Image (cartoon, rainbow over all chains, first blue to last red; front, side):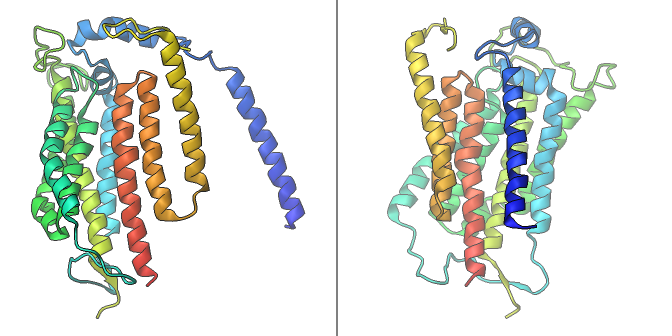
Length: 253
Length: 94
């Protein structure tokens, strides 16, 4: 195919894409004009039905909990896939787990970075747990909390060495936590079935006060398990990537 | 653009409009910058800043849950993964 032909083909494709795009845009509701009714119904009913004032979490973990189970297992599969793809292959060797670069000397970790990491690790852990355990009351949730918990471990790596990161997050433990998190979510959902209820029905007591941390039944519990799963999954993924970058070399010397 | 938010913290409509338009312009500029920058490590750092901008955008449009997700994934998790991958590639080229 000559360059001229290619340009023509590109031109036709782009014109078509722009035409369809504008056509699609013209059919959208105006900015800020939600056509409803699903959102309005949820806003009216959610607090009364679930005692959760974090309505987004009520939707994520209860009304559309089925979708979230799927997303949960996407992340679970991604972490498993990373572990499989980034294993040590034949013809690769491991070497010492010290930061190094081929073309320059690696500067020692500066005092400033150690200090910041030390100062932040504790608060970051607290914030992660807070987010994972307050999905039912505030804009937060297990997913955000889990990722923030995982960043605490990245801070540990930044302030020290890879080996310290490994000591804080042994693979067996993170594997187990991830499995408990993903399995816990599914188990909470399945437990409704022997009671004659639909999968993921909110069967736990909802508490007396809307917006209390102890309220909202399974929503709070599911968020907690999601936090475990997501935190462990991110630690695993980052750990695998660090290992791949730092330890594994081609050749067998 | 949006109706006033009548909560305990009522914000004037004009202020919200100005904030939303400012953030939209910043996000457009940030996205363009991410595409135009060619040096990869710089690109990842700008991508991280772009993630923060997007998070502010979601906050300005009253979606705090999405803000948190965008902050954690766009500004932290994705840049970390990209930086590690870049470090790996760089070593293979040695």
